[in-house]
Image (tube, rainbow, N blue to C red):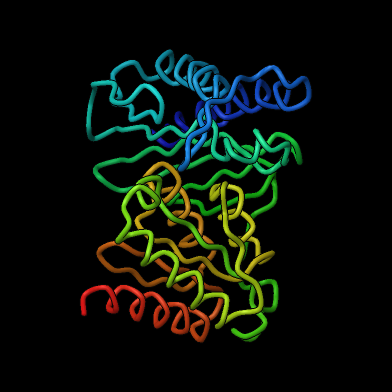
Length: 264
């Protein structure tokens, strides 16, 4: 068996362990939240991460781990797990069912395996670079669903955690948001990119614009859209993905215009 054969069920078990706990928290309201002007943290993040790490480190004690809450766990850097135990803390706090647990295995510097579990809809995504993406037990083919014209598209917008803390970066993000809203039918501001990457891969939404995205969601997302066959473009601080070349070029132009305007 290959590394990915061994790692796939472990990734799934780790996400399910965290996700099932998060489902309980969502229904019984037992999590504590700490709110700031730019973000929210929760006791659920820490507890979910503990469940993920127990599964990963039991199966692969020599692998390195980068975990959102506890940080770096030393190990073999050529076999590195990136852990987002609760993507969508703001949604959980607000009572919205859009949150997930996610893990990505980076092999020799490249994302090779990712899993994400959204517990309220009971949606599980597993993606392997060598086998593609599946939703539950169903393989995902991004070409199966017809895509709308750019002006009729729904596009998710993602910014990293540091953006709102940096006035210059926040101004760029605001410019990107206005450009996407003008170019497309709907701009979806994502507080849980892992869920929305899955929806994009399946053709439920049509594109994504990311500005200074966080690694724990971005590595998974890029693997998902690559497996689905979507079109992408990227720069030093941004990434776009779309179901059609026309939408990709429209989103690229929006981001390039916004980032260029801050340099003049």
